[in-house]
Image (tube, rainbow, N blue to C red; front, top):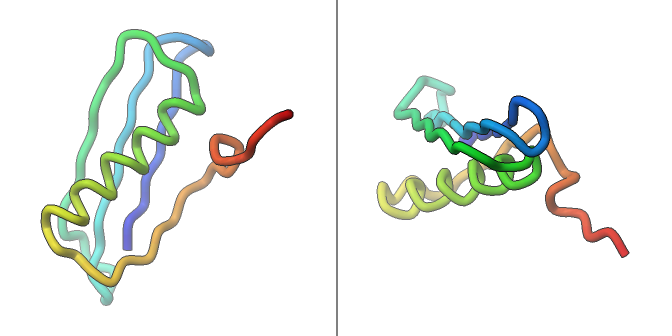
Length: 78
């Protein structure tokens, strides 16, 4: 299971991303964090997901269930 999150202090502003990967028993396997000097909330949410997916691929943690708390970053506004 991949859980990710990203946020900013102000928007745009100082941002950060992070996540955890858990096994099928929901035990912690690994975690990651990364900070950014200037970003938006949507950027941080999407970067957190991207970084998590890169780690999943590198570590060959498949199949994977993905849990995120934001869908706004994936919705197109016309």
